[in-house]
Image 1 (cartoon, one colour):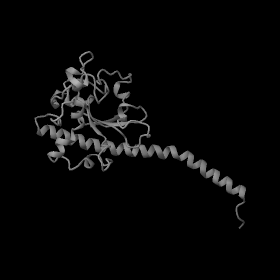
Image 2 (tube, rainbow, N blue to C red):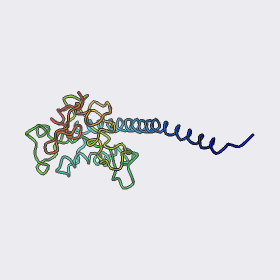
Image 3 (cartoon, one colour):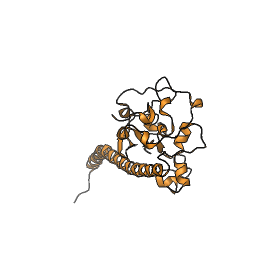
Image 4 (cartoon, rainbow, N blue to C red):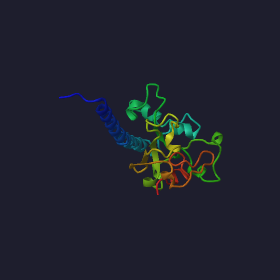
Length: 220
């Protein structure tokens, strides 16, 4: 049997490269879907434990009282849960967190630790004047439409995107746990009813600082 000629070899290599090029988008899509599915499962489990914590502590969402700022209080939601043994570590919540714990991705809505009356257009206050406030689970008017927690970054964002990518891009779908325990996906535009995001003193970002707070809607 004769060997391949140089022309035949080039043709074969060219065909292989074309097939690889055609398959890459499908592989990338499968990779993204696999990560999204894992994050949805992780977020559902986390939201369930958060709900249990609230049930054990007067129906109040996790609140770390040493902070004045509601933004910092919302980011500190794991601390009381770690302290009381609901989770063993941040890695138990988010397996993708690094050793320095600087890329923890699971965020709780600030609406869960802030007075909804200060989250109305014309009634907001500058961040320096904002203070956290305990919020009870039974204050949520539309549990199936109010986002409670979300995975703020999918871990495979392009390097030039913000770590808090959910509020900044429509390129990816992100998991969001609703206050009724269900988990859905979408980008910030979809969670804003397809309308442009309008902020006032940081209030108005879907899920993170929803208009009307815990009384507001992220999904209609």
